[in-house]
Image (cartoon, rainbow, N blue to C red; front, side, top):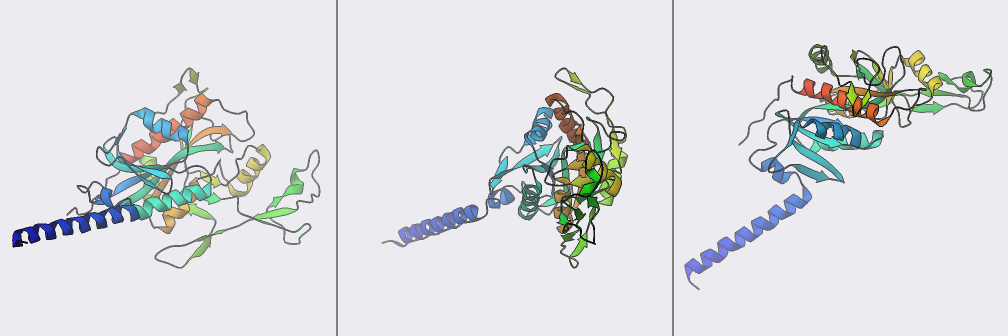
Length: 330
């Protein structure tokens, strides 16, 4: 066999080995191609997190999101991470699904697999204080907490919890076999310090302050498909948000959250976003569209959609107001 033929065979063999290794790498790490293809994700993107189909519909209906022409999405563990721009700002967005464990898992995956500079969460919530927030409004909380983590005390325990079930007996207060429950702190882990127990999770101060400045004159959506809000929706700053894995429709429990914790909204996601972002030492901010009031009548689909759309409008204006840091692209 000639030297030329041997050289050709050698080159072909090397190409086959390289292709096999590349295929194995792609299977092991589905982000490998998108991370190296023309540096499409070689600059820091903002991570946009949402939970529901209604939230995603609001984003898609806006026409502001443009998928990347070469790598529009990456699928990891059953979730689709979308790559593109939102009104020309580079982002990645993921629909997490509801409940805290799904939200935390999706946010952690987003932060581990992609170069993300910070997390913007928008979604729906219920108002606990109708004097402050009504359907269609957008809340920008200053802190969030898991209020569904309880230590359920023994009946007639001397060390009573804040939630005394007997206080809610009807028609008269009295003793109740359910006893009391004490709301628990959670462990916050971090890369730069020892873990600690916390209750309130503060929103990143720089982003919260930027939101208060950028969104103070934001005009929100008032009507959709023939359904209009009774008043002009507004953005409310400085509230506290309550997160749990149960949907709060009960007015008495909503009043309890207001009285004991000064919470004004209830949802099932924002504290998971906060905890995961803080653990990874990433900036984050939360925008909650109010879709209903605890104890009030159920909102129709038009009002629920406007809650999602108004939260999206707030998130979009915020995203377009902050700079996008870049990484060196070789």
